[in-house]
Amino acid sequence: MSKGLMVRLRPIALVAGLLLLWQFAVTRNPIHLLPTPWEVVRGIGDLLEHGLLLKYIVASLFRITWGFILAVVLAVPLGLVIGWNRRADMAFNPLIQILRPISPLAWIPIAILWFGVGDLAAIFLIFLGCFFPLLLTAMNAVRSIPSVYINAGRNFGLGTAALVSRVLFPAVIPQLIIGMRITLGVGWLVVVAAEMIAVSSGLGFLIVDARNAGNRYDLVVAGMVIIGLIGLLLDLGMRSLEQVKSLRWSYSED
Amino acid sequence: MQEAKLKAEHVHTVFTRDGKTTPVLEDISLEVADGEFVCLLGPSGCGKSTLLSTMAGFLSPTSGEIRIDGEVVRGPDPRRIFVFQERGVFPWLTVEGNIAFGLFHLTAAERKQRVTHYIRMVGLEGFEKAYPPALSGGMKQRLEVARALAVNPDMLFLDEPFGALDSITRLVMRAELLRIWEAERKTIIFVTHDIDEAVQLADRVVVMSARPATVQQIVKIDIPHPRDISSARYLQLRDGIFQQIGLAHKI
Image 1 (cartoon, rainbow over the protein chains, first blue to last red):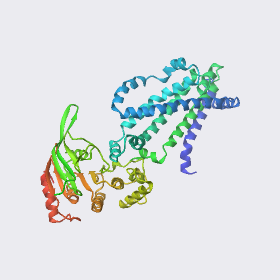
Image 2: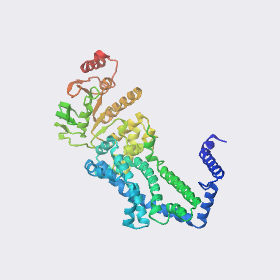
Image 3: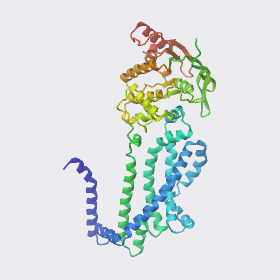
Image 4: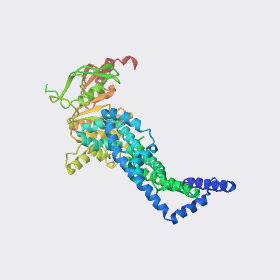
């Protein structure tokens, strides 16, 4: 077998080993602390059969898409302006630093008060969870642009608009992409929490519902596994953006 | 004598940081003729780069003024391009994209033709689509010079442009720069701390004192190009500058 294939199989072998260990540990233990991996697989099968799995995945993805996109659209331009303009920075920074440490979950009661139980409340919570990390990423990205780029842009006679679109923006894109990748992960954490309380569909709802309606821990763990897998796929998707050639400079700079 | 291209008149610059003021430039007066190659020479941190940035319009003097073609400099201008070490090339643009950066007012055809011309001039054929991280330090430096020349400026400001290059590449780049200067006759103001570099390149060397920088002496290098760096006159001029800077006893 080739060495490259061996290396690629290593994480799969690790997961397989852990699954075996899990099965072994649960079957040996008389008190049922966890469903076995096989029960979890059957649980996923059950969900598929009832058409719930796809429905819940779509519901969760719908919410994170809207929450995340809204946050990007609002936080990135605002962050760029605040990071660029020292007066705006002085005005906004204290407020940002006060709002930022408040967990989005602390907003759940207010989200329900404002938007009722439903998609809007969940989207609002995800938006909050994504907004501040993105805002700070954009602010820091602008501040860390080397002044030679700005000076060179001005030297070639660029006006403000051209300076923003031809120097500022390309210079911050790589950092923004890294920030968006991390933030999407944060958003996915918030989805599950928000769905446990604010809505009656989605993967987070699946988990509380499975417990409340008859202690179906196989479905609880099935929900967790699906959440993990989708998180992995979201991260891989964002990572593929980092492979774009005109963006790769910041990752390969020696 | 013809009207000076650039005229610095009693330029003073004081930096203020944490309420403390540091004089950086003290009463600098200097004239540079059209098409002249002038080196500003001085020890690191003496303020010569500050003077260059002021001439280019990135900094305003605390008092005094810089005039170019009779006009007071109030900001950077595409007619006078500043070349940073190779750090100034845009890493998100290809070689072509970098050279075309300042050519946005031209038609696509003219732009293409200029880009091709300057890529050839600096010897970057075959790297048109390459991104700067894939280039060596010397290639990035040539790219930045090409980007500057492409907008056809009448002046170039070079801030220790070859400082980060290895010594062999540095020699090659000096020869290249002289070749380009002789072909295009731009006015060049070149900052360096390297005495040999200054004497090899410049028509006149402006020797600057330690901070706050003043013009200590202006040395005319009356040796025609290409310069024989083992000639008696070369060594005499170089040693004279050595003495001026007060390093002679250390080397």
